[in-house]
Image 1: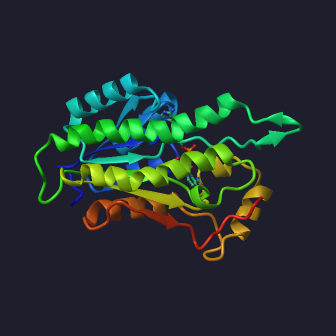
Image 2: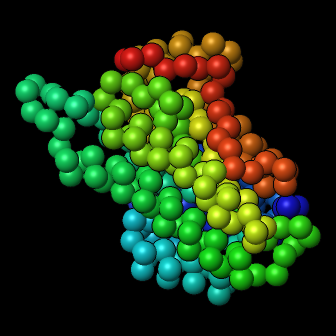
Length: 253
Ligand SMILES: NC(=O)c1ccc[n+]([C@@H]2O[C@H](COP(=O)([O-])OP(=O)(O)OC[C@H]3O[C@@H](n4cnc5c(N)ncnc54)[C@H](O)[C@@H]3O)[C@@H](O)[C@H]2O)c1
């Protein structure tokens, strides 16, 4: 799908990090973009900066997503691109100091990262399948998994499970939507320089960068955005998870 001023997009988690980079890249191509994020303060400022719109949204809530998509469609038409970047990454071990992992914490990570992504993607796809085709396709959904889906570290049981879920649902979603010309892909990033990571101490960040074979630095959010845009433009990419990680394979800790 060609990205230009005739295309409408929604980006969850677009107020920060990887999502914000995707918003900026889509805006640079002229696409109309709605940011769906729960962080209204940051989201509104950034939306104004790049000429996007902002909808305060909790991706885990069906009603919140329905009204955000409704408002975005009212303002800029049916979205043809849906990029899911909203996510959280709290760390906790299965058993810590004799106590089992807090179940509510486990459930909240699954709820935001996995249920939230499916909630937005399925509601977005419902709008896409009802729209006229643009050439051979009607729309594209891009999920954000993580390399932790495949080699989660200590303390990442909940996060890795949520991202493994994303990796698992990408192909069946693509199959479900194939007849309607909607593609579904996922990107599994390695370690990127976003607030999720840059909020850690410099020592931890240096350690993370040192573990990346090449290039030996944190990933640049613009590199993530560039892949997301390529996925939109390349109609033969469908139903798979692409690692974007500088050959990183996470170690146990
Ligand atoms: N940064 C990395 O190294 C890295 C690596 C692998 C995967 N990822 C994944 O990439 C995605 C983006 O991460 P990031 O690094 O840009 O993080 P970030 O913290 O900079 O941005 C995440 C955004 O999601 C929003 N969000 C969180 N919960 C939400 C909810 N319930 N409803 C709506 N919005 C919500 C936050 O407000 C924030 O703006 C996440 O899914 C993360 O797991 C990041």
